[in-house]
Structures are given as C-alpha cells and as structure tokens.
Length: 113
Length: 115
Image 1 (tube, rainbow over the protein chains, first blue to last red):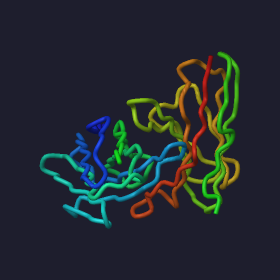
Image 2 (cartoon, one colour):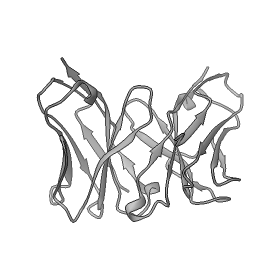
Image 3 (cartoon, chains in turn blue, brown):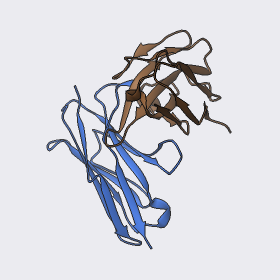
Image 4 (cartoon, helix red, strand yellow):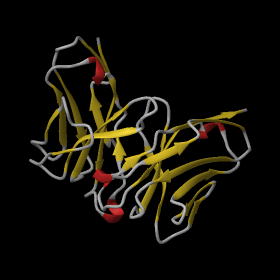
C-alpha cells in the first residue's frame, strides 16, 4: 500500500522568509496530492491540492510542486506571516475517494516575528 | 454555518470503560470518516461510511465500532477503552468522496485520555 513520508517534522522561519515542506510517496499510481493545514485547537483544513496531470499549482502565497518521476511533492509558502504558523499535513492516494488517502506525519511550522 | 460538530471535546476514561463520540454534519454530505491523530503518525483512518446505513473499516479499526443510522450523524464507540486509545479523534465528511469531491471537512476534534 501507499506510504507517505513528510519532512521536516518541525520548521522555524523568520517572518517574510519562505518555507518549504517535502513529501515522498511510494505508490507510483498515486494521482491526487492534497495539503491540509491544522491550526491550534482546530481540525485540518484543505489549503491546496494537485493532481498528477499538473506539475505545479499556485494560490496566492502558497504553491505545490509535483515530481512524479521522483515520487515527491512539496508545499512552498512565500512571504510567510504569523498566521501561517500551524501543522501542515500532506497526503496521497491512487484511488478516487478520500477513504484511501494516506497522510504524512505532519510538519509543525513556526513563523518567528 | 456549523459544518462538522464533534461532542464531547474532552473526555477522560478509565481502562475498560465504554463511551461514544458523536459527529454531526449539516452539509448533506454522503461520506463520513473517523480519524485518530497521534504525535508523529499523522492522521489514520479508523472507520468510514459512504452513506446512511453503511460502514466500512479503515486502517486502524480494532477496538472501535461505528454506526450511521442517520445521514447527518456518525457515531464512534469504544466498548472497552485501553490506554493505547488515548488520542485526538477527528470526524470528517466529504460530499461523495469521489473525484473532485474528495475535499475533507473536519470537526475540531475530541481529546480522549484513557488511564
């Protein structure tokens, strides 16, 4: 089955700098890769996702890149702000249906003022 | 908009006690899910439901039971709690779990401690 590895487990950056979180997956058939953000005391919330027919997707300050050959995908946050502090989870699936999503271990991102 | 509501938010149990976690969604979603979140292990699927009256096992179903008697509600039961079930539990829902409707909507979680 699918296995998703996420790095780093913790990341601290200065406000205004960029942050990058990387995930690798094992199943070459995986074709859907969402990213969820979990703020303190709340449930995860989808912030961006990408499908395997696209190499990069942007939404304002966040972007996700996908390298299917190397089987890894990354979340990029530019011009970081204090409200970006949260735990971020990547996930992957080869199947239609969220019940087959496999999540990474999570990255705790801290933005230092 | 309430979205996905979980009750209770916190609970402490003694080993061997039973309890039920309630999840309610007001978005008319077909699919509902129960996850547990443990440090360093991400989110792991316990059970899920693809519609009223249906349930299915996820990745870590042992020690848990679920029921979906009404479309808007999904209950997670622990018949005999064990310390290994100490975790944060999240309920989630999605429109139909297929294709572009895979987006999960999560509740705010239940912190469960089993002593």
